[in-house]
Each structure stands twice: as C-alpha cells, then as structure tokens.
Image (cartoon, rainbow, N blue to C red; front, side, top):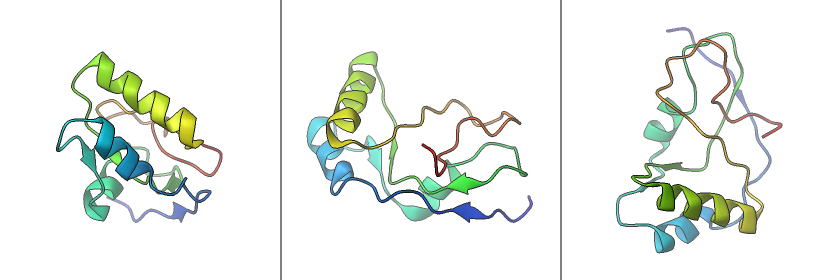
Length: 97
C-alpha cells in the first residue's frame, strides 16, 4: 500500500468522543489512533485523507441516530463509511468535511 498524505482537518468540537461514549453502549466508540487511521480511508491510494476524531461501530439504526444527533449538536462533521473497499475516496474525512 502506498504511503498517504494526511490532510489536516478543522479542529473537532471538544469532547465529542466523550459525548458519544456517554450516549452509546460500552465499546462502540473507538479512539485508538492506529485503528482510527486504518478506518479513515478506502482503497483509493491517490485520495488525500483527513484525520477522524473517532470511529463509531453502531449496531442499530437507533445508535446511528444518536451519533448523527450528537454530531449535529456539537457541530462536528460526520463521514459515513461502509466496508472501505471502494476506489473513489468517498468515505474519507477531508478538509471540507
């Protein structure tokens, strides 16, 4: 896999990971930098990649709704991601996100 350039993103709202941890079941919010970096891109090696603050492993539509609501309330951009096998660079946080 080619080396990627990370694009700096706008500073996240303070404490979004903690807000999400309070609202979701234990273990759903991941902030380990290595895991988050690995899930912040698809297979489009040409596309610039931003840095996500956290990854949420939602298990239901109610949990997704909770995440969307929290991000809206905090003014934090949200990037939905599937399996990450695409080649378009679409599911990645970016400077514009």
